[in-house]
Length: 407
Image (tube, rainbow, N blue to C red; front, side, top):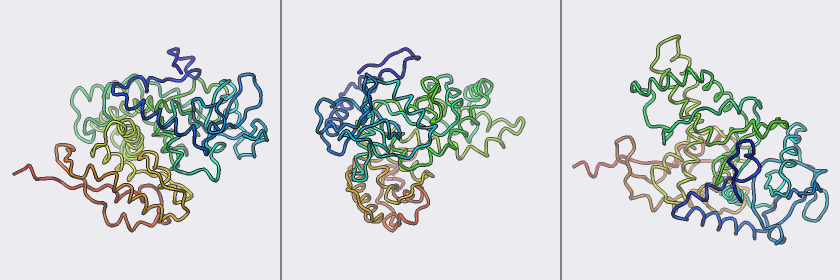
């Protein structure tokens, strides 16, 4: 597997720099261990696209050694185009015709390739905790998102060199350097905030299950418009590109907040809170996933759980509020139908996960803290009454100020 530096050919080869940039070797070891486990799991199936244009078919690597290769990910429906692992036509899967056209065009552009496609490859008996394992072994994840095809290429803008998403208080008065940078960015990209706000209104960002799809893949998560069957190879953006947009947008926010010309502050106040919540959720999930293999740290955990506590993602089945995040923590919880039984099991696993960090002091914004036991209200939560993820995770991450070194 290799990657190509030709931007016009970015879809033809996988970018494996995420594995090569690994001095300790831990990430590569984690990936290889996870992939090896998947390839012998009877519940793991892939879609194989033949190189000769023949009918696509479902393969099961566990019982088909010839096809034990790499895996990718996407969304899907097919039917007349795909045979199952028994060489029978795959059962119909519901999908809008325009979305199917984009998918088929994408698959046709990748002969002799393997794909994991959620609605086709996940069965009713598939363990829900395997989903996180699959996403975590993706070297590239292609997500078909409900937005205008013309929107995504507009988000390719200049590189922001700031390492962290938040390195300043954009509610306060910015430094002269930051003010001038925000002013320049606003002049060059006056529609950036509006474009990001348009993107965040896509239904794709509101689903619980797409959180793992966005957060866990090893390599790029590439967004394409689900109705763009003609230009999907160019009308695209990665989550990394999107985070770069966020950094520039925050610089613009800071400038507009400090500016009193043309009512700029009032305009930004309308969208700033929702936009920063949206940005933070994506950034914290991707950042935590990047570092979780190397070392668990209280600050990263706090940032992640705080972002979940602010998330408005929703699901139809309450158990998915748990199963939809398991992959991030590598918890194994069997499929259960009782939402509250699943929730209590999750809290038990999370207690074990956080126990090694409980005595670690950490600093946030100049103050020292310690993690504490979960708020009692977390144990009383009834998932059946939850309106969204924020309802579920508000009382899970708790901490207190530490003054032991102040005397």
